[in-house]
Structures are given as C-alpha cells and as structure tokens.
Length: 120
Image (cartoon, rainbow, N blue to C red; front, top):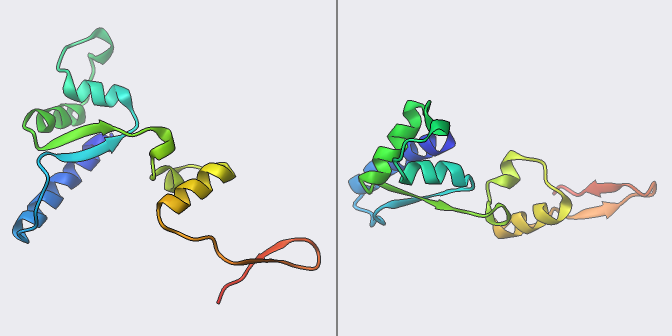
C-alpha cells in the first residue's frame, strides 16, 4: 500500500522536476523497510501466497519494470519515517531526531522535580 502511494508521488515529482528542468536520478529510488513488498515488485513469479495481489502491487511492479522507480531496502535503524509513524524508545527517538537535524528543546527541572520545556 505505502509503496504504491510513494510510487505515485515519485511519478508526480518526476513530472514536476522535469517541467522545472531539474536534474533527476533514473530510476527514482524509493526506500522501503518491507522486504516482502520489495521482492514482489522485482520478481513477477506467481506464488500461491501472492495469488491475490491487489492492483496497487501490479502498478508498482510495472513502474519498477519500466525503470521509473527502484525499491531499495532501508533497515529499521535507518528508517527516518519511524519517528513520525510509531512510538519509539528514548534512544532510537533521539538518534532519529539527530539524523533529521533537529535539536532537543531546552528544558529545566522545576521545584517539584518535573521537567518543563522552555518555549521562547
């Protein structure tokens, strides 16, 4: 599902950037953490377990075959989208926040021992 939405957006961005005469990589890379979806997009072999593939997967498969997009694997540790899509423990949250180039808000400890976020 997410791969098909990302593929549609990549095609739209390609059209926009082409109109703006911006340089493009060919094919456009799409990072995905689901190895099953990547294998289905690259290998058109019909399996019993993939018998009921939706039209969305066929669309992604066609775009990969046409060399419009390329699905690449990204590990869970390197998946920057995780910070926006799921609750994370402190260490992975802080690492991904740093990878995005964000800084921690300034904090102070109040008299009751609680932490307050200082907003300027």
